[in-house]
Length: 150
Image (cartoon, rainbow, N blue to C red; front, side, top):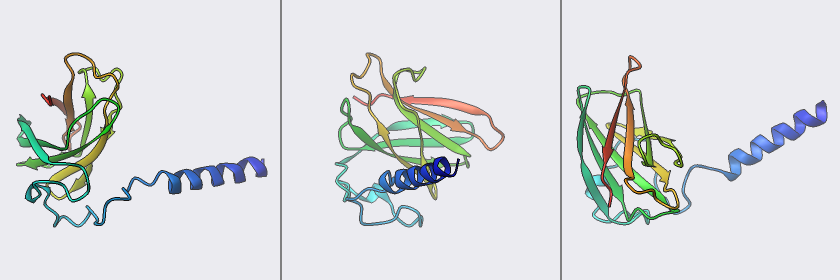
């Protein structure tokens, strides 16, 4: 049992260190709220040019969706979402069909009024795919918004 416990601790520790969610090409921290991705015509992190996909009204909030760079099958896409007029408890995102089948849903990180995240793009990208968000209100209600990305 002691061997199993020690192996489990080592495996988890190695996994956390090896799978650091930071990005080696980033030279700044997103967590202090004073960094504005809208200011960048081209991302300084190597994500590509910022492209706004649109706006959706969800609950009492206005949600503006933007991506950096191209969204390509089998790659990772960087999202930048601005939320005005409300305070969601969580935002999850994926690229694909509404059901999420064949896609990886990602919980986005918060930075002030913005949410950021890197999401996996399925390969192949199914016909009719969109960029989907599930916005969860503080009271637990959820609402979905989607954006055309091609």
